[in-house]
Length: 113
Image (cartoon, rainbow, N blue to C red):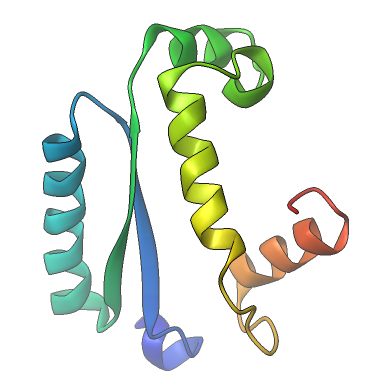
């Protein structure tokens, strides 16, 4: 199965989550990019990283979003920065696959603004 051929997906964006440093985040992305380009025939771009911090771990344990539980945490700041960049994107004309349907429903329900 090739996402580019089967679902019309030509590109994907990667966020490296719970990494110890920006360099580690980029290394994770770089490895995934090489694999995706070789085996999936899609272009992958780096959206950023979310640092691993104690607040993120505690939010996961509490089953709460780190942004709600600890809005000033480094991981919350990173999520907010990434969301602000994504907010400026032009939305696609229509959903073409499972994840896009999911995101389209979230946006339509006002969960993602």
